[in-house]
Length: 301
Image (cartoon, rainbow, N blue to C red; front, side, top):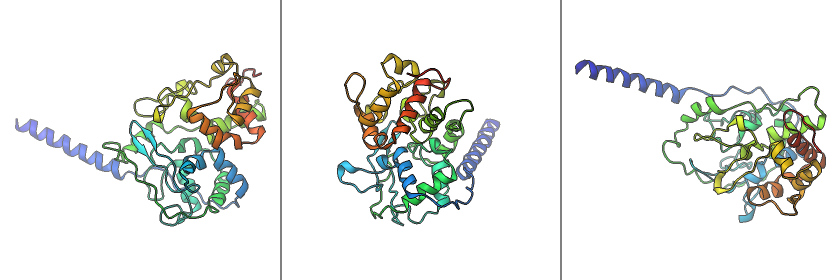
């Protein structure tokens, strides 16, 4: 019995030490200096395409731009998009461009703590220094709003942020947005938008019980979106079976109207209203070309 108790004590001590090490284990890497001059207009466009404005603003309730958006209800709790205005206390007014870069590309806050993956930072990991500089220039023009966002309503054990370090080790994948040699400029642009800034896979890819995306079924649809909504498959075969063409899909991303004359509903209606209708015609067409050709570059009509 004495040996059993001693063994249990040793295992407990080892486990406690391992847990303590995990809690203090730093994640992320120090970003390089952001020294490029930013283009405010390009940054504003990228912020719109990336969903920053739609997610972090609650216009229907009369909220100010980027002052915190509608909560995202998930099986893990309710997440409130933070205030991203230039207020130094409630927003990001005291951040540096490097803090901003680390948050976007790595999902790590200035305090070194990881963000919950309700923030789709994994899709922004390939943003260039110029992208960051442009976005930062645009965000610096946002008027300050002193109202802090509500705290996340997340219960135990999901309120323990150190656990996100393990989650990141398993599910934080590179978005793989780099150009592919031999493909058209439009296809590569569409790939960059779909896999990166527009983060289509955040909704249109199924997730496992831990909330990680099933990349073996990328774009195959998701029947369990936050709030009870659903996202259909946007794989080439499903799109073509549904009667989609490049021109029809590009038009739908602008207007919300489908080939059958119906209109998008639910969260996709919001995506069109707040994000894709602001894209340039060339970008909407690029997205349609990539989705209908798919990763193998098949023929799109």
